Length: 139
Image: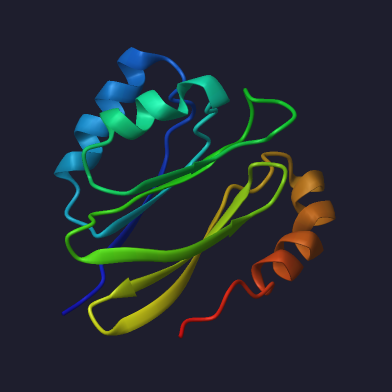
């Protein structure tokens, strides 16, 4: 059985109408895990987002200092996938999950890179270094 992964840059889903449209679209995507970038999630809306996302488990991560920038997410179809562990950066640009899919274990990295080329180059080494940070091993 294959693990199916999709990726989608939503260009902000902080407004409820757009978020509901995106969630409806994501429900039609035939994948086990979706890597979502540029969510622009605000902390006070996270619980509502969890309820609105009907795909099972969903992890959201955004910048802790500026709640209206960046942001990544992992909506997951929980009937086939179990999230075993996760790790994230402070800027809301990287979310790493370890998941179990049947008897297989995977580490998946969702990165929302800076939009400006100069910032991408400047942050490139940080992104590469961060994605190699170990999170709790499977037992």
